[in-house]
Length: 285
Image 1: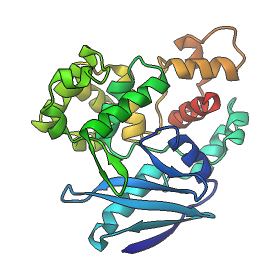
Image 2 (image 1 turned 120 degrees about the horizontal axis):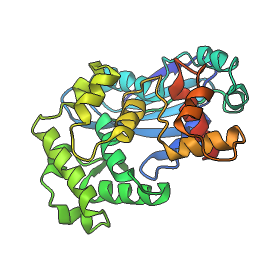
Image 3 (image 1 turned 30 degrees about the vertical axis):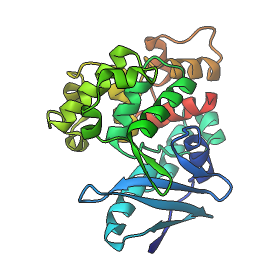
Image 4 (image 1 turned 135 degrees about the vertical axis):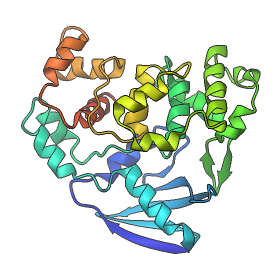
């Protein structure tokens, strides 16, 4: 057993992080004790779990195997955005038309999915579904074909999903087309036609060029992978309906804004467009 204490510079509101994470039934979150259990993989691709607990501005990260400490600390820092200077971002937006929104949700970081692969699978499942049913389908997928360690669910690996038949997903109320997208993509990953680890070193444009070739992946999916899988800071998915609704509400518009209007309103938000997207989504959750 090992424990590491980490202090994060303000403003950083972990309670808001946990509130948002608790929307997903696959996340093992304890709001009262301000902690979450995180599923990870070590350098040898072995799964393990660490606990992240907030005590004031400090975090206590606890794991079982000392050999996994470095991987765990690097990953939880990446996932929870501990190295991102939120004070700089908040000062930036304090001089824009989103100042009120950033004051209201101060300290909300961009938190990533635990793995890029999870993000991609979740994107497939969530395509064109309302959020409630999307979470139901995702939970069915993970609990049926994945596994657990210490009560923490892990997504089924690409190798596992690659061996499934389409009917095994349609039996869970997946559409036939969505089942094909998920299983066919898992096969490409399992056969090394797609290398998700290489996406980390690619530009946004290179990630788009790589993923857009895959059947079932469009611009919306790529943008979500860039945002919540890779943590790119300057993305603004103007085609996202939730973002359109949030802007309509915040700016008191008569109709959902078209792309041109969204571009005009967001002109001064760069280079932190991803945070503007996050805070706008947050405003209607």
